[in-house]
Amino acid sequence: MKTKSDTFQVETDLQWVDASPGVKRQIMGYDGQLMMVKVKFEQGAVGTPHTHYHSQVSLVASGKFEVTIGDEVKILSAGDGYYVAPDMLHGCVCLEAGVLIDTFSPMRQDFL
Image 1 (cartoon, rainbow, N blue to C red):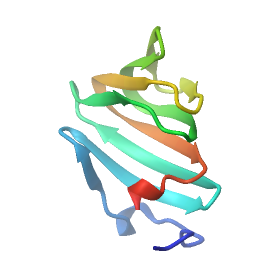
Image 2 (cartoon, rainbow, N blue to C red):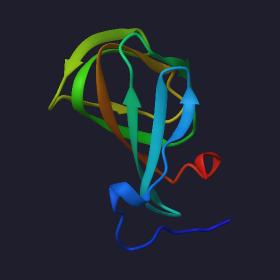
Image 3 (tube, rainbow, N blue to C red):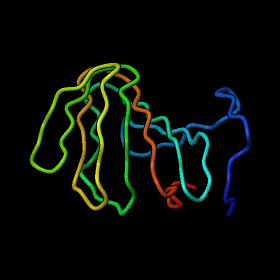
Image 4 (cartoon, helix red, strand yellow):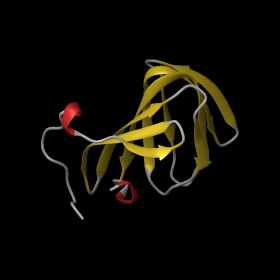
């Protein structure tokens, strides 16, 4: 398995991978300590609630999402972001088609 990305990522050269119904992801830059992933959602698609040991920070690049982290629920739009502590239950529902930019530390080996 590759442990780091190429230095540059050109969107048109990168594949989108089906993550779940209505959700696709595109792996951007990464090494063992850090990873950035674009996640494209169709309206109504669900980011199923889950946990992982990685720290996560996400940016809403476009669209509108109902994001649940632990017991908190917020409606977030383009320009908003959120932090997920390790092992915290989190998920989302896409209210308007859009893209999340997810960053993880350490990298998500399970995505490669």
